[in-house]
Image (cartoon, rainbow, N blue to C red):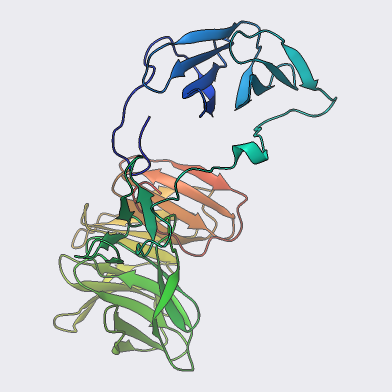
Length: 377
């Protein structure tokens, strides 16, 4: 049991449990009821952890979801495919309430005017919290403000603000770049952090993990641009119609880009503006990603990916018939693997570093255009 603000965590039951999957609270008696689908039992205990008792033993076949009202317990039974009830004190008056062919009851709940809360108002009513308000346990009338994982509380402890320590997901359309935080609670939204004038056609994105700069290809104006995420200012880096995929090396401050005309990968020094051919190929590279953790460049081509160490003429090739059009590559340090998005195969594949095989992760998912990884996702 834990308070709604996350405090006062206490274990009510820690022994004699296998698969507790149904839970109901009797606020009148201050007791918790639960079902164990493995033991086929229904038990109860006081909220202070005392008075544990068995209500039913091996009578319920596979209890799943529970509810309690007045003197009765109600639950759905997966094995019997029915909704049943019994007396909440002793398990007597066991009876089937709902059983119909083709219907497998899942979650259940009860709605009744007597169940409407009539206690003191929540301390979170009209609270100044900008995102999430967490009430402290009664009888306290206090609360705590909380934030989604990508934000932090301000000095007043009520408003959430951006944190420089969290990462963001960047998404581009043909003319705009957006910043968003997926899978967060509270006021989740996205915001435009930059745009380009017509003619605009944003394609490849490369974030700079050192500072707030983002590099991208504008095929509409035939140039590579650098944008400051904090100010929104955009400045040209290079001009030309030959730019394909790009990737950034934070250690050397180099920007790698695919020359679609010469079928090569070129490295551009952002410090000196010098260019050098890093990889030459007999076919046009479709994707690439620089992996700082390995100091290697991974290049995707039809039927293979190549692992390149700059200055070393020996190139490791991972050949696979699965790779029809590997148009997106991303490295996960947590998994120590390169994930490969293949638009033609409509799949995502995985190559574990140091192995010789490409294995499927997701198939038949549509045309994969671009990917990103964060915390195992």
